[in-house]
Length: 247
Image (cartoon, rainbow, N blue to C red; front, top):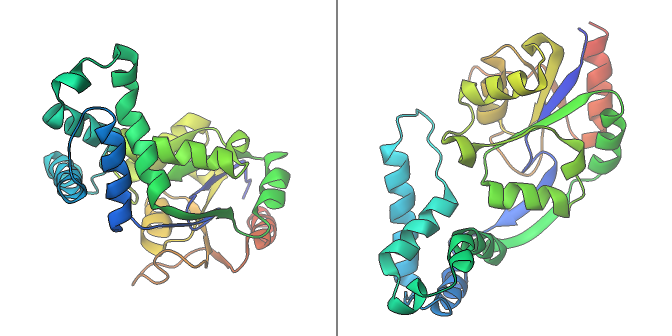
């Protein structure tokens, strides 16, 4: 096999992240931010509205694996609960507000964001020889800044984010999109992920060889799904690439 590129999942593969969107404090903080925009929405009602809007987006989707758009959710919340005060805010502030609220929501729910051991050195080595890309089930207001925060953003092009396209892995189109963007065939790339269904099953459906990393996140077993190579720490990926190149 001639390996020309590698495609990566992010959370649970490159980045060890922990968030908790169920905490009351998340909605208290966002509710407080909204109050400075003239929007009176108590935390409980904010939470109910947020998840109702998320469900509405997914229910309206025609996709088998639908994804929501967090910025659109906050746009809807602003529209529903705006006051005369909020409608008089500067136009530029109003335009940016949904994105700002999405970032605040993520920041309030995040407790850990760090690379797994060996990721930086391994990615830096691979970047010298191979095209590197990302497919992540996430939202762009989170995914791109978080990759920047851990120092990885400059290594990947493209970065395909599920929230931008309206569907999640294992949807085949996500994998086809990245192959088209890097102009490589499925037989020329490896996919590296930590979830047996979303990552391994999804990539294999379009003919991509898979490297499964056993981490502290993701579905570890899926009936009928077997990765092409398994690693237990990230630097072992270099051995996996050599293995495939020797085939």
